[in-house]
Amino acid sequence: MGDRRLSRELALQALFSFDVNKLDPAAGLIQFCAQREDELTDMVKPFFLGLVEGVVADMGEIDGLLNKYSKNWKLSRMPVVDRNIMRIATFELLKRKDIPPSVTINEAVEIGKKFGTRDSGAFINGVLDRIRLQEGFE
Picture 1 (tube, rainbow, N blue to C red):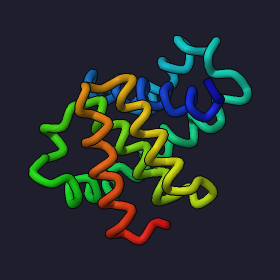
Picture 2 (tube, rainbow, N blue to C red; picture 1 turned 180 degrees about the vertical axis):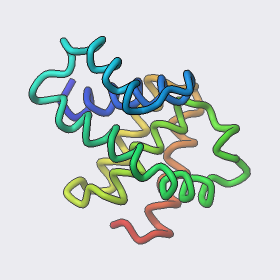
Picture 3 (spheres, one colour; picture 1 turned 135 degrees about the vertical axis):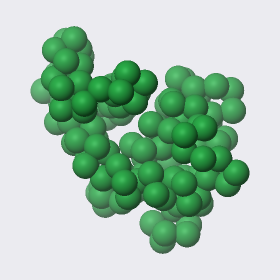
């Protein structure tokens, strides 16, 4: 597995933990990093931190886009895994212009297939593709 994929998977796990346990992200991040220090190598940690801190900082904007483009699904009703995968990917679409949107969406779909339900990949792909098309991320 590549370093960026591992960073994304760890970011998902951290954000999932904050979401489910209603943790303060700053305190939760310190705790998560201490528990996963072996995986958070010098090649993984910077991208991981950028994702987690970026999603937390831009959560309002990200969640607004997810609500707008997820047909018939309120954010609060989405599976927690899918919601946090899409938060990471939406952050990448918004702020990481160095990552092609197709790569971001593909990574999100693959992580959704690994950690989510059998329908996660298609659901994640549909929502993110609507965001990409409607918001003009090419």
